[in-house]
Length: 224
Length: 406
Image (spheres, one colour):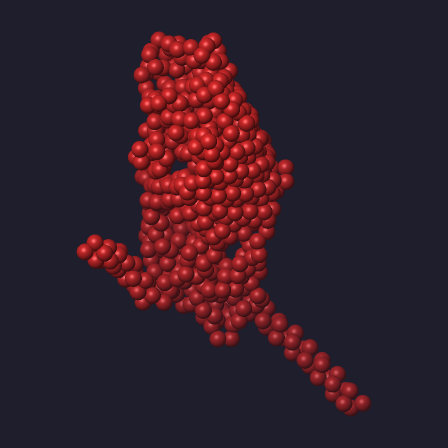
């Protein structure tokens, strides 16, 4: 009887402890980092990625990364930029009626998959951080980027350059900013940002190279 | 000495690559986040090697009555190993969002004299987006009517050899001109496209068809090609301008947004001045459809009807051709079957240039890796040509192809 009572008391204490821990955890998860990515002229830069470069001690990923999709629509990758945490499985559904042959020669991931509409290929797991440049072997102008970031805390900037990193437990984080055409190295953008009761506001400054992407052929000319 | 030079050149070529690799590896621990700069100029190539087992009739490429590209020795079938296409494609992204493209082909078949053939060379600029926009293109180009020449370097997509209809469109369809194109999505369901073009160099369009008749050939001709006629020593230049009247053409396309059905209607008229010696007056209309009734099934069909007149000689013809192609693909495999009908009818009495025939083409294509494709194709042709051959060429034959795409 005494042992049963002890066991019950232990379970209650354990449940209470867990609840308290969860409560504490949920409070800790409320942290955010707000900010903007701007150019030398002060104008916001869209389609930049801001991410936590390494997780501080005591902070671990909350859940395994969710699956992601890189579609092909109207002979373009959609989205053209897909940031994912390392370990994410990405599928490549072809929404076009025509044949695409997607490939990457990037160091972070090398692969090639012939893609027809209605034929699902197995998702590809991106297990190394870095830039994965995508192309289509048939449609030379198709270009996309999968940015594999090392942590689950990342955000893409809006049209005005603003971003919010959410659900960060209280800690000090190394945060960097990246853009496909950035001339500023990732190291130069590194900032240590403390997340506590106050929401920090951070500004990253990037200098971009002029864009030189290949224009798609949208008319009836061009290979299928 | 030569070997030494080659080795030295290779070393010189490899040195920057090695240095680049070393520099990338030591330059930054975060080097994997660097995006390699996209070159504004790109080069691609295509090599297609064939083993062809032909029928007995000698090919039109050697001025014979045969309907296929690879012919026999009149008394016996022939087997040959041939480079069927060697193409170099160049592209450049220019200022103001313009694009330049060019393609050169080398065709080792004897009648081209081994000179490079200029398949296309144009400047293009587009305004707007996929849902609505317009574009301008100027330079050397081919008329846009073929529904089969949509593979890399303008190779046929479904078979090794295109239909008779599209073979001819890529033989005599070159011009130097300008075209404008407009497209728009309407009612969120359909995409309309209208292309209007005009150009020079089409004064002898139709000459080849009238005198030689239809053929099935994947040989790509350039604007500087001379196409062989049956008579010894005679040829038709792909580009010839004598009357200084521009050709005109139009291509209207309608398709649903999921691209399950696509319709194209085209018209061409070279507005040839019949008072000028050597000028043909040729015009035609074409109607084509692409359907995808099932995700893995393509159905392509096209009809073309027209006439080619030439006042000094009695060799004007009316012509028409039709094909229906059914193709099934699964992953990197594709099996296609096509039925072709082609006819020319004499319009001016004797000599009679009437040409009539039917063909069935069966093809299997398999792509592996990014750069390789093997294919097998068998063509059965039944045809009858009144002049100048007075023959019913036997043309059934097969081809085994290996294609490398750089």
